[in-house]
Length: 374
Image (cartoon, rainbow, N blue to C red; front, side, top):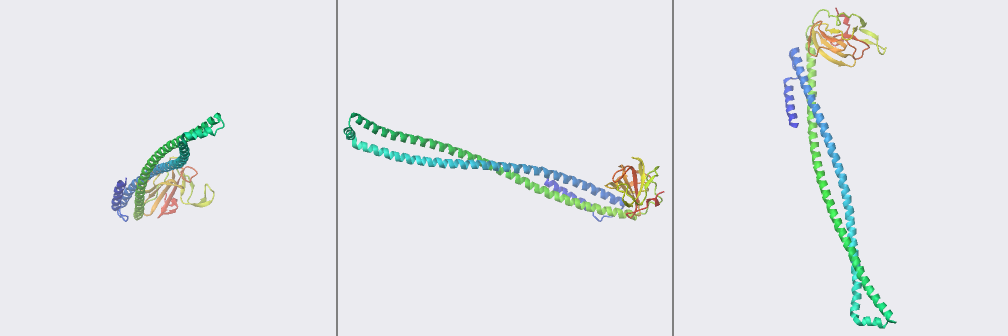
């Protein structure tokens, strides 16, 4: 797209060099040059529309990528929080293991001390317990108590060891879960990086599109200015041409009812007194409108007040305007003859019914049409 725009720019430079703003020549030459420029302007606008469409599409893609980035960020943050919680649990497990180790060490010391005393005393220790007993039952009871104490110490150590094993296994599980979370976070980070790279690439492309669009719009403005200058040259050349001569033909053959004359009148819609710049001739919808004299169409288009209208230049600074048409049969730049059909009667624009609004302009100033009509 960027290379195409460069080629297009070179083409426009070539076109602009072919039609200098101060171009002279005959009216036909000027009109031809203007037509060519207007074709180029139409092509430029198509290019601009295409670039605008491409910009819109790329912006939508950027918006999607930005949405993905936001979603990935939220997901990563969620996993990071979960990882922090697991890390805290691992720290708690490590603390628990340390406490259990301390408890095992203390109980081991107690058991070792007790066994060491019993070992040192040997058989005499048991004899002392028996001799100091009140009777045999008491002696047996005392021996059972010693054995129960030792067995209790052993069971306690065993229980603590089992708890330690469970906590260590839990820690291993937690470490595994933390590792898995780390892997997921790393994958999400990699994915987010890919999306951010894609988004930056789209933004760079968007910047190029904007630059190309700005260049095309600059070219369009330059060509429109050139077209306007040629239009002025055409008008000047047409004014330099002598008037076609003779009285003007009636613009709506067979229809002679004038409903509003040139000059002051009450506005037919608002009722406010205003100046009327032409002559209104009533006629049925679709009735043929003819050119009042030989000339060249210098405008054919729409105006909010005139509706569909045509202006014909007859040379010598004299032009005629035909307003409120239902259809236009002649186009800008077209040469027309006296009595040739150029439009059809209608009621477009600021109008209350089917009629022709006919004007005669001398060097752009509206004047009494009836002074020129046959």
